[in-house]
Length: 137
Image 1 (tube, rainbow, N blue to C red):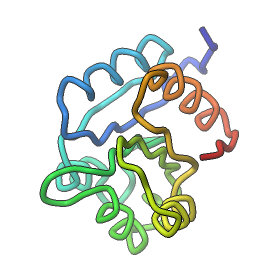
Image 2 (image 1 turned 90 degrees about the vertical axis):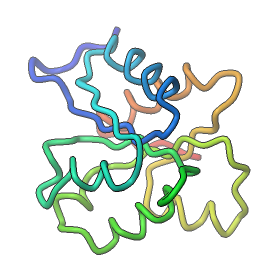
Image 3 (image 1 turned 180 degrees about the vertical axis):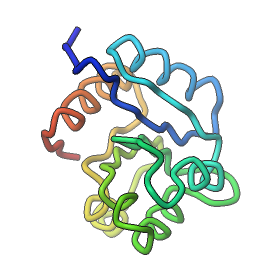
Image 4 (image 1 turned 45 degrees about the vertical axis):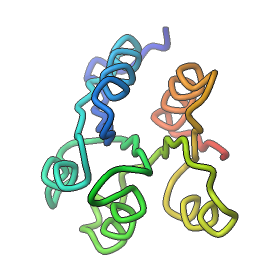
């Protein structure tokens, strides 16, 4: 397990599938993170507030009812600087087009596709991004 500072890094997982959100929360909690979940974009915006809510990373699902991950990223473009400064990791089952990929990677550190090795990939990616590293799509 990678050693983190005495203060746990605070992550926000925005995911409408509650079982999947809980799985991510458990996985990342085992690695020393404080993980809060939001079932959708409106709740995530509320938790972030104007000052970023103390979060150091956002794990964002793309496909959600009502507002989706693209809507969240568009909102974030005009959000206060404290919110814009929080790195975003996209998690999705959606096959993104080249145009969507360009849009996403201009606003997020990387895209992790849901699939067979998702749990390994999301933990590896979050550990990398939270330690200041960059991640590729």
